[in-house]
Length: 240
Image (tube, rainbow, N blue to C red):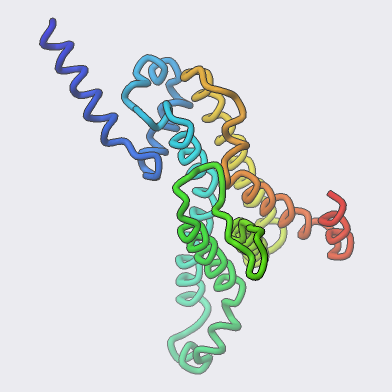
């Protein structure tokens, strides 16, 4: 029995060392375990190591959960574009359209994909390694600094969501946006609550993550601008 206990502890240690808060597969595996089997997850929480024990690692986990839905949505666009080309445009028609014609044909899809890619580059360029704050850049000619990458990421995530709804048409796009909103906010909040209860950590870690205001901003205002007239939506952006 002593040998079995040693072997079990050794396996747990090796598994904990192999877990990475920035790895989407590890994050999804942990989220599945926490949501579907919370009792088993609480009993074997040592397996997940620093992913749930350290504040910064938990913040990285929540950041991954927050940005995963938008990349899942945008990842479908190349397939949809390929199906559209194969079904609606013949090879001769593609040659006749040319590069500029194809850009005009798929302008919304290209804007959505490009915006998501630029947002990803902004997140990578930030490079603080901190899951709760953005790097602050010094403003030229002053002693003040500002998190420019945060605002750039927020704008391009918003533009990606907005263009995605435009491509999907109004009601299908709104329905997908609501599903994305539900999955992003509700599922991440559920995982965060379970981790806080299991680990006995402070509450509200999710809303302290640096991607929380970005995603909430993008979902809120892309939804608002599609449901309301542009002038009324602009007033809402200013006053909300």
